[in-house]
Length: 317
Image (cartoon, rainbow, N blue to C red; front, side, top):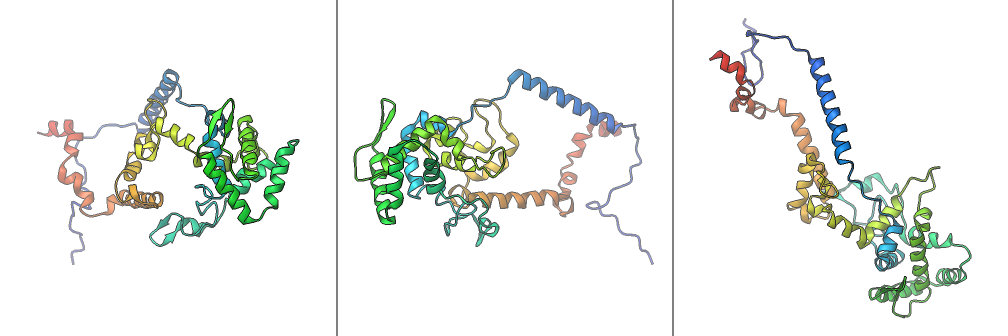
């Protein structure tokens, strides 16, 4: 009985019987490493790094205090993007990223609880000492009922939309917003001095390097997004693969960021998780290329190898 398996060009490799030459793989790797290292160091010295100064709450409050005040009231009344984001920051129902019926964030639970009215406004203001007007405003606000607080917040949100910046302070039209005006004004001054950045650091670690809350606060305003648009870093500007200024960015991310520009991803509220899932499928498909019949045979059918090894095939003709 003949048990020899029939040769399959899509699966089997013919034994090489042609000429051979010595090849030092270790030397090739070493040379390539040294060349790339020298190029990286040389280009870094020549072009430096396109790092812009970090944007903080202090930067924002001094550059655009009106936008800061307008954002602060949305944090206090719980209508900002951070306050309504859902998992992993809070428990707002029905707003988390979903993959079909599955909410990946909800499966992981709330692991970084953020309460913007308290974390972004009330708690930082409570750290201020020696300001009798602010203390009285906080006492009045905390003693009021939920309905009264909501009424003040709504009135101030309407008024601050017409605010102007005059002689170093935010000027807000008068209205029935009770102590909220004093509270937001104090928070703005606190941000302009840099004290708000410090007070919002997560103190769970000794070095205080958790900037989650301050970054969420920044992202809720218009200042950071305007900076991103100016630097072509927004999502609809292929921002994931861009770099500030005219420096080349991460060009290898083109496939990932491309999906954000086409439907249904460009109009989907779940774009992040959908693009991630698609990239995982494409990554697995790439890994499995050697095992997929037909697909793995494309190089053999296209004969691209004859171009790569053209000197060898030229000598054989």
